[in-house]
Image (cartoon, rainbow, N blue to C red; front, side, top):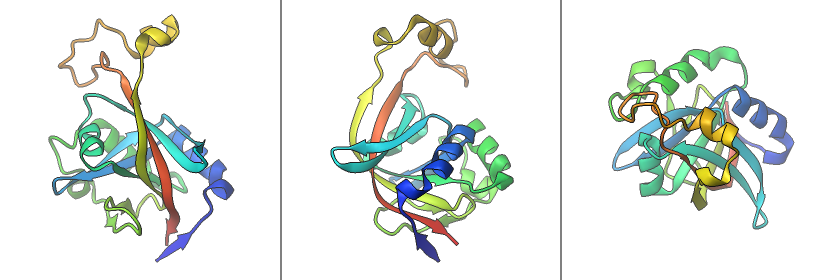
Length: 178
């Protein structure tokens, strides 16, 4: 069962979740993948509530977002999801079916084609309304050196030569899976 929520009444929970880690879930070509993030924002753009997520160009989830243009944000309401967040942040959906390996329960969404995750019950359903690749020349030198060092081999799993793409997702539905 899903209990509809007002996003703005749950901003504290959403932002605290992002700070500690949430899942972004994408779906395309019959594949679903959940990826851990801890960079994100919630706000209003063009008079609509939006969640902005940042996904590196090389990530498998980016390919799903590009193909489908929809994603869910799956937010834990307590500390019980630490193992899930750790696993989904360390493994690539290109190589492993995370849901099968870690035992995630995907729940059909109300408005979009991408499922929510029962184990992280506060769910935002989002449709991409804008995207932009970050410009490293517009960043401070400190952030560019810390987050995008060019001395890391690009085939290494922790490579960070590529930048993030900001995906602005209009929040078209929000609820807690009970």
